[in-house]
Structure formats: structure tokens, C-alpha cells
Image 1 (cartoon, one colour):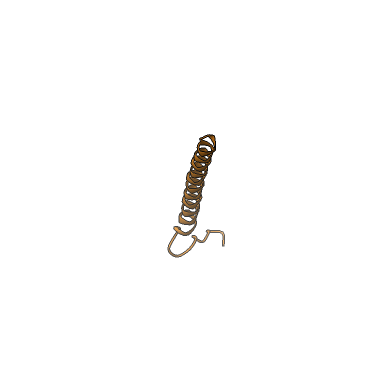
Image 2 (tube, rainbow, N blue to C red; image 1 turned 90 degrees about the horizontal axis):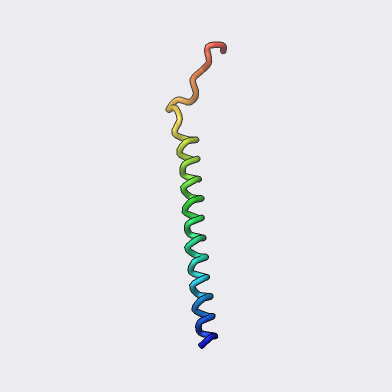
Length: 53
């Protein structure tokens, strides 16, 4: 029985690591989406020209 309990604990630990990995992946994708959204949602015709030019 101790070997069976050890295997069950190891499987639960592996599952927990997958959950943490998926959460980290989701957070990274959210960060990339936010950065992409802010970089490319600017003015339709580019930046304004300054008066000095």
C-alpha cells in the first residue's frame, strides 16, 4: 500500500504542475495580447506631424 500512496501523490503533484503551467501560459498569452493591442491600436493614419517640421 505505501507504494500505491506514493504513486497517487506523485500523480497529484504532476497534475498540480500542469495546472500551474497552464495558468502561466494563459497569463503570458494575456500579456502578449495586451501589448499587441496597445501597439497596433493607434491612429489610423499614423502619428501626427509636429508643428516644427
